[in-house]
Image (cartoon, rainbow, N blue to C red; front, side):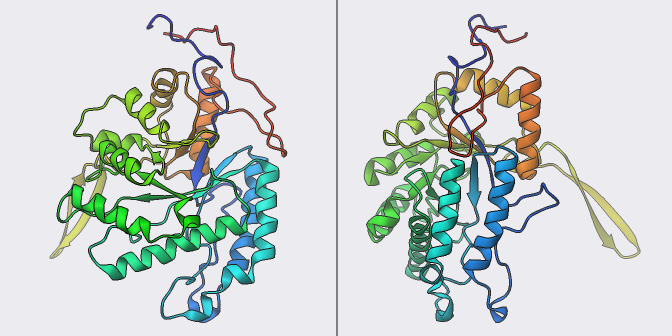
Length: 350
């Protein structure tokens, strides 16, 4: 065992929260948004109703961090369906009530628009659509009365003419956002094009925080920045008083068998997973190492990106507890801590 590495409050953030994204697999599975087609008249109010049940489940399981779907208001930014554009305005009372529930639970919320929200696209129509989507996310969070920790996480985008030009286009697209939308945007490093050094450069340009994704960093880090330094650099971009967050995932290691019919016979082949693919669960040994070494003395939240969603979080929590690690504290409905970490002088078992 490395001398001096110990468990407990003094060694890593004592208020860390683990979160998961969108889909709820526990409690038999819970809907998180109105997914009906436009012909059926879907509405944000239906999504809000679903979220009340989701938030109740989060309270029961003492999960204090959650990424909401970016599709809460169906078709709300679709240019050819103006009948859906007023959903936030039509749901102000419901959104305010939902936000009050989130604050009472101490929930930290965020969203992560998908790959088609590209603020630095060379196609102005795509940029226009991205701006509409980001404005909608900010409008939703503001209507819920959420604080500055409720952020909208996006990637930089493409780089057909190089990362420098792509960063400059992002900066130009960002300048077109309203101040309300700009205050919600945070930028994440990706696994192919925009590394941590690139999003740190973007932070210097637009003043918005960086969400560090550790798996993406392992996939694409031309500068060779060690994990502990990368984490500290990313956390330093967050303003005082706003809780930073990062993304953590475990790469898939299982092979996939594919079958292809050729004439009368079936050909089978084995496909090895890519490093960037997320596993169903989080490796507890790797996460323990991350807590005790990379994350020592730092405070931030961790969004777990695992296909097992909430079940992956609950399994990781149990596995860490069996090792005497309690990175989270239980939170009461008024958001105050009610549990403690292990003894800070207890050494890690070899």
